[in-house]
Image (tube, rainbow, N blue to C red; front, side, top):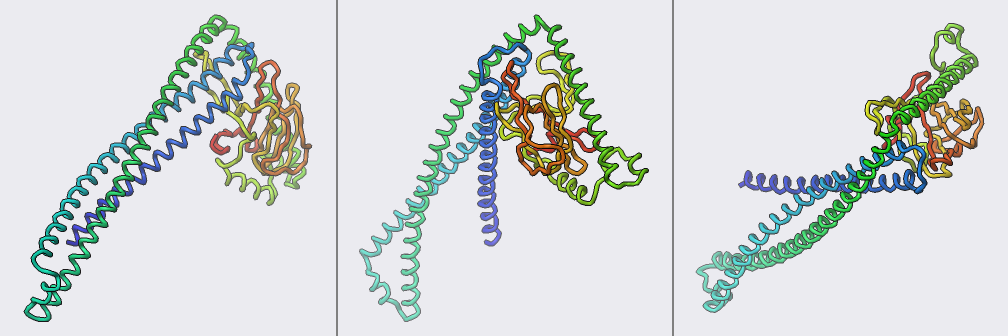
Length: 408
């Protein structure tokens, strides 16, 4: 008997836990779907906010490719969520079927019990049933039996009501889930229609790009050359600032000559340690942004066989947006870069760089806090794009910002 009870409890627990995990999975998919929908809105507002024709068709194709990529993820997520709802619906239908079967048995037993009770009452009254006992013990047992029988009948009635209410609840839940599924399928259909239109637009643009492929490749190479020049300036400035800081640090002559990084004070070491502890949790350097170009060597999204090298990340944001610090620190340097400004913030032996600013709100040596505005990001009047170029360094070594910034 005990083993049977344990087995029953195990089965009940298994189904309850299964339902909890299924709901958690669908909740995660729902959150992912909403996140992707928001990302598409961000892409539209930051990359497609104007109908002005860009001079560079490659940029248009890149923007469209990014939107198609996110929309494809969205459709895939909608599919997964719809499948999860399907599983819940099938499970719900099985539960309803089982419950209806149990309820029918309960009602049949209850009706039979009432009928037998009625027949019993017509032959003997309850009082006579007790008084006709041969002795006191028998009378007591008969009284207890009648009492237990009444309680059992009452429990059966309550159980019928409880299962009826549960059945009504499951039926209502089933209706809601079916309605959710219809909404999702309609949303999927809408997204598929949009992506088909976007792919057609992309194909037309790619055809135009191919006609001038040599010209665009030359433009890309020229941009890369300019970026390498700027990166060399950044690296040189960092090395110079490290050398200056180390001379002021009071380190020995050998330490200064042999060190390729900052000679840290106890306070600077503590700050660097705090910075390291926040890896993957640092705030974005803008309030609202979208990474339009990642870190490292990557294939060009439009031109086959062409790779693009990036020592940082490029973040599109809204016009009038301000760059903000990702962590507390000190302004190490402010540099003029191709007509705009770059601000260097030192966090122990780490440096975060905010490039492409048209106005700067801080000066060298200033102490800054996390999320403090340090400058206005430049908006290109030809493309109407507002792009922050963000880099991270550890001494003279480049770091991938995406592994440091939260959810990037």
